[in-house]
Structures are given as C-alpha cells and as structure tokens.
Amino acid sequence: MTDVKSDKSNKSASGWSRRDVLKASSVGAAGAAAPMFFTKNAWADGHESIGNYPVKGSEVVFGFNVPQTGAYADEGADELRAYKLAVKHLNNGGGMLDTLKPSMLSGNGVLGKKVAYVTGDTQTNADASRTSARRMIERDKVIMVTGGSSSGIAIAQQYLCNELGIIFMCGLTHSNDTTGKDKQRYGFRHFFNAHMTGKALAPVLSKEYGKDRRAFHLTADYSWGHTQQQSMQEFTEKEGWGTAGNIMTPLKTTDFSQYLAQVMNSDADVLVLNHYGANMVNSLTNAVNFGMRDMQKNGKNLEIVVPLYSRLMAKGAGSANIDGVLGTSGWNWALQDAGSQVFVDAFVAEYGFPPSQAAHTCYVQTLLYANACEMAGSFYPPAVIKALEDFEFDGAGNGSTLYRGADHQCIKSMLVMKGKSPSARSSDFDYLEVVQEVDRATANYDPSIFPGELGPYKPA
Image 1 (cartoon, rainbow, N blue to C red):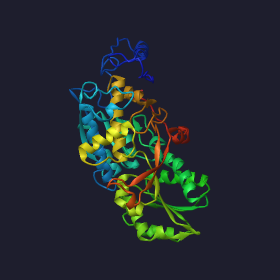
Image 2: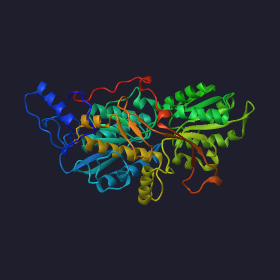
Image 3: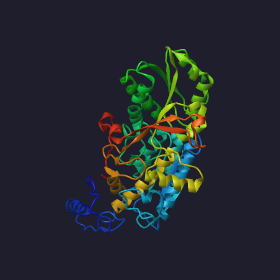
Image 4: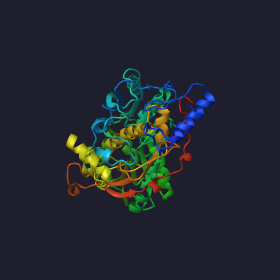
C-alpha cells in the first residue's frame, strides 16, 4: 500500500475524501488491473487484510490490557473503569462525545458496529502483558489493544501489536522511549513524557528552591525511571543544580530504607523520587518516617520532589506526607474546561468518585481511535493510522492538542502540581493543587532529539 496521508477534510458519505479516491485509484492503475471500489468499512478491492481486518459481524472488539495486579494495580483499576465508560459512550452517546472537536462519533457504535471488549491483566510484567495481548488478538480477534501503566509493559505490547498489525493506543506510559527510540508505526501515545516533565518542572523547582541545589535521585529500574531521571537531571542542571547521585531501585521494592540511608549520608539537599504508583507511596512514606522532611542540608531545608504525580498516589501517601511536594500531572479532575467536566461528571455518576489522570488518558485514547476509524471510513489499520497522524483536536481536557505524525506523541498542555496540606483539602479526593498550567508551545520539543523510526504502514 502506498504511503499516502489521508485528507481529513471533504469526506464523502462513504467516509472517503476525494483525495483518498484519487490516490488509491492511481495505486490501482500502477499496481493491479482489477477495478477498485470504495465502500464504507472496505479498503481498495476488498481483499487487503492485516491483523484482524477485515471485520465481520455486527460488533467490533477492543482489548483492554491493564495491570490488575502488581505495583500499578490501583492505576490499572481506574484505567479499566474509564475504558468501560468509553465503550458505554461510544455505543449510547454522552461524555466527551459532546465536546470532542472535530469528531465523527455519533454514539451508535463505530462504523455502524457496536463496540464490545475483552480485558486482560498485564500483572505489571512485560512477558505477562505480551501473553495477554496476544491472546486477545489471536483468540478474541480484537481490532485494537490499549492499556498499560508501566512504560516497559506499554513498549512490550507496542512491539507485539506492531508485529501483528494491530493498533496499540498506549495507556499511561511516561518514558521518553515509548515515542522515542521504541516508537512504532502502530503505536500512539496521548500521555505526556519524561522530557516534557523535566522541561516544565525544573524552572518551577529553581524558582521555589533556588539555583544552588544538589539533587540525589532514587529511580525505578526500567525504561520510564531511566528516562525520567535523565530528563530531570538534564533540566535541573540547566537551572544550575548539581547532581549528588542516582540509585536504581527494583520495581518490586517495598522498603527503600537502605537507599535513603545513602541519600542522607550524601551532600544532597533535594531528594528526587523517580517512582510511580505503590513505589512512590512507599519511598515517600519511608523518607518522611526517616525525618527527611525535617532535615537541613547545606544550610537549607531538604526538599522532596515527585516528578510524576497522580491523585491515587497522593491519596496513598497521605496529605501530611505530600504537603508542598512538587511534581507534574497530565490532567486533573478539578480542571474546569468543558471536556474535563463532562468526563468527570459521567465518571462520578458511574462510579461515585472522580477519575485519575490514568483514567482520563485511557478514556480519551479509546475515543480517538474510534473517531479515527470514522474519519478513515474503515477499520483498515493503515487508513486509521493515517487519520490519527497529525490530527489536531480539542475538547478532550488539555486544550488544543496535536497527535504528531512524526513520532505519534500528543503535544498538549500539562500541569505542575503541589500536594495540599490536610487543612487545605476540601474532600477526600482533593489532594493536589495546580501550581502552573504549562501550555502546549512550552511542552513541545523537536522529535528528532530522540532516535528511532516509526517503520512502514503494513503491508508496505
């Protein structure tokens, strides 16, 4: 199939643009004598197949592969809630279907087919995640896979899906590698990354704590932790900070005492916890129990930084522990834009409490995939990929957003957050406050700073 970017405007009733027809016709003239017909949910002469396309029957199946056990199980549970809500809205209307622009979603399924789903448990383990994803693809015939809360797990699934011709809409994954050296043509990420965190957070840290600082990093020993530490070190050193050390900690660690002792014996006056989920809850709690928030180093208060924050983590650590601790988030349930509020309202009505940032990104990813199918007029993966590439949209909670074609990274606004004190909280869900909303232009970066190639649209 010739590499042709779809024209997202001037779509016909069949879902094809005039440019699609002309381009595909020219391919047919050059490569085959058989005539080509263009109908909804068909591609070229109707004989092209890839992954689980063509789709048969009255429904289409999505695969939701999330950590239901392991260190990131809390995030996974909220992701799964969001996925189920997205399916409900795709089939029946409501939620962000009312705010996403531009959108071809009608609330009557996707391309006339009802959306069904299957679920899997990644176990926060790369091998388990691949086994679960493969089962969904081969047994359940899913047309799309989405999920993950660990970048290592997301990258493992992304490679598998790319190999098998199935689009993977990444869930919560923050490593630079996901859309950097490990980018794949069949993988897309809505969530922001570690580079964007470092770029946004370092100037705030410098302003709050001064430029004469020395940081010691504790880092989760896998793809996300590595790139988060590298990005934080890069951007804090640009602000004038020094780096006293870095220790890689295994993902299954629950007691961080031995590592914190090394931090205390150094000359560092800032502790950077490149941890997420239960790891962050445990390492921050250990640090507070060690009395580190009451210590002074180099004549300054020792400060703790959590580069990647979530409400679930903040609640787990407790408001007394996170009080004043700075970090970043991709989204927060208290945002007042229309897209955020319709999603929050729908989620609260369904589950009785507000969604996390993991839930938000997974919900949005599901809608974006479905909308791309409608835009392409087909479930054919290369056509859906081209509809997503360089797609500009709004109404999903982060303002104007670009799904960049060069690396499949969403470029959008993000948040610098600070933990609230117990007395400042207004509810059991109010743990973080927005310090600064970092706009899309500031968060943006040149994709060529990271290696990697997207690869071909299969079949090429």
